[in-house]
Amino acid sequence: MGEHISVSKFDHIERKAFVQHLLDDIKALEHLLSQNLIEDDIVRIGAEQEMCLLDSSYRPSGASMTLLENLNDSHFTTELASYNMEANLDPFELKENCFSEVEEQLTRLLEKAESEAGKLGLKIVLAGILPTISKSELGIDFMTPIPRYHKLNEVLKQYRGDHFSLKIRGVDELTLRHDSVLFEACNTSFQLHLQIPPEDFISSYNWAQAIAGPVLGVCANSPLLMGRELWKETRIALFQQSLDTRKWSYALKEQVARVGFGNHWQKESVAEIFKEDISTHRIVLTKPIAKNSLEVLEHGAIPKLEALNLYNGTVYRWNRPCYGIGGGKPHLRIENRYIPSGPSVIDQMANFAFWVGLMVGRPVQFDDMDSVMDFKEAKHNFVKSAITGRQTVLSWMGKTLTLKKLILEEFLPIAHHGLTKYGVSAEDCDRLLGIIEQRVKKGTGAEWQVKNFRNLRKHMKMDTVLVKLTESMYKNQQSRSPVHEWPLITTKSKKKEPYKWVDQIMSTRLYKLYENDYVNLALSIMAWNNIHHIPVENNKGELAGLLTWSHLSALETDLVENNSRVSDIMIKKVVTVQPRTTIATAKKLMADYQIGCLPVCVGSHLVGIVSKVDL
Image (cartoon, rainbow, N blue to C red; front, side, top):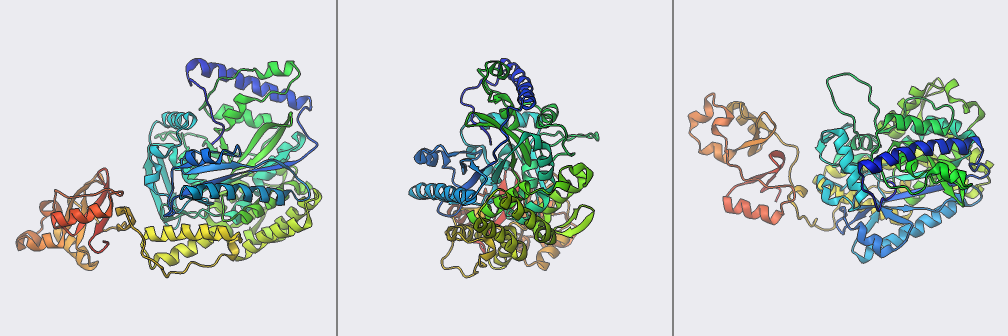
């Protein structure tokens, strides 16, 4: 989630100074571009690996600060949630064995993190969205205790003017509201960086936009969120909605999302992209800046453009333009932010080589994308690929093609040509692009998850399915094999799951009644579905009462058989529990009150029921 801010008041004086620094940074960048001071004679690659920290039961563990302290390695840093962290890899020149070198460093860093995590009884897993993450891990107590994150949360909430809303419809539907930006913490990425010569930046950026949909489709690895099967790459919808500061209104008006793909092909220079973002999105974070970039230039030095970089870190383009300094020289790069973490290190390296090869192998006819492709086709391809993954049918240069055909017949040859042009070893080209070819033919990480999720769900409760899925992902990652070689999960359980909380065993697909429903309808629903208890809600969707078969049997016949309303006969003083009530407590409550079920509520809203059968 960007750089840390160690000292900042976030006050009016600091903000005023920051705005001036931001404007001066744009002028400084334009000067660097006009004077050809930006590095253009070398191409480097880099990456950021986000990862999830799990406890022994494969659930999120908020121990990242302790683990980072034990690691004591500058490659590792925090993320928004305390159960995520990030490893920043070193830059490598695009040549010869660069991808093997990146893979070796990434593997070494992950092994180091895994080793230190093991000493704390924890595990590291790579997942676009961790299957076992739940609403319980989205509380503010799971936000990493760093001022930047809390200020980001505070300001975005203020700009939003309301709670954050999440609504994603796939095979299932997830509708949820939350009071913080921690929805974003469900996302875990493998972010790719490619250095671009300034004179080719706009052509490269537009090409990156054009290929984003097909690349995303073959890399999809995030089909599940909180037990719902949604998009093949659910992160795309989740990330946009989790940081959406747009206000809902009755007026129909244009509003640009802070997370997005863009709305048109870019022209002119990278400075114009930054100007567009500054013109469109409000400043979220500020910090004190000691040196003015224009003054630094006057003294013959290279400015860091600190204000611009901080601002740019709070605008979330899926292809993000970046400015940086390496070895004393300024450079430009494109950051690919849409690739998910996982399924395995080798899969990620294949994604990396495929994207870089496509980028540097761009055929000359695509130098001016505006002349060969409508921007909305590229944007539509991106959204469709996020939803349907490998099964996507794409619009490409006036033709309708399956993703499989486009990648096998056009994109893989382009990628191979690009890598070869930069002297990447034939062994790495064949090995990594071969994985993409097999994945296109056999299936993505998202498909592996969905297939196992549906199969396990036939035999197990939801919580057990999600734990087993996460455990299998972890073990397959340890094998270092690509996802198209992963076996299906067996449904045979070697041991009984160590359930602790009510939400691990409760039933969530519930039949419900309303206060003004008639009793004869209630009786029929209970009889048809062979259920012995049914909750009653009011018009606000709050739990208002409970009907049970034993309660109905004890009532006088005329109360049940006439046109009585449910509200007339329901149990109004209902004993309830919360999702994180222990099972031991639930058992005791049932015994003490001599009842057969307990509604599970968050506040006054029903989220499940736990019964004697569940116990």
